Structures are given as C-alpha cells and as structure tokens.
Length: 58
Image (tube, rainbow, N blue to C red; front, side, top):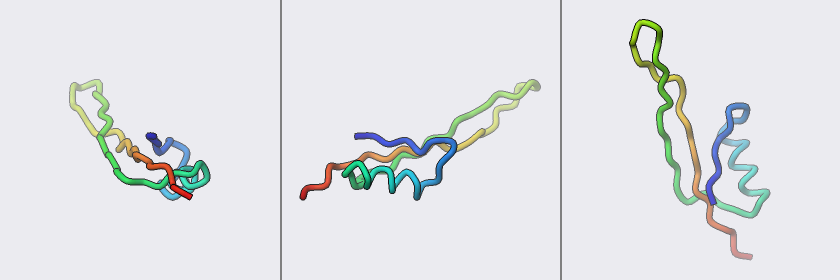
C-alpha cells in the first residue's frame, strides 16, 4: 500500500499514520514537483515523498 506525505504533515506524522494502520515502510520514493514562472524559468516547487508499506504480521 502507498502512503503519500501530505502537504500539511511531516514525514514522522506519515510514518505514524502508517503504523496506526498496521503497515511498516519498505520503500521511499521522492520526486520533484516543478513550477513554471511567468518568465519561462522552471523551478522546483517542492519534493513529493511517498512510502510503500508492507502489512505488519502479527
């Protein structure tokens, strides 16, 4: 299952949310989100972070 770090939460908050739902992180993906300015320049707006979770056996 995939868990995205939302704009209003920290990485730690996302990991706690995963744990509450019974998952542990096994992979982490980061990708830049770009924005194009009026003058045509492209800048990185933010990093989008996503975790892949594995169901905790227990």
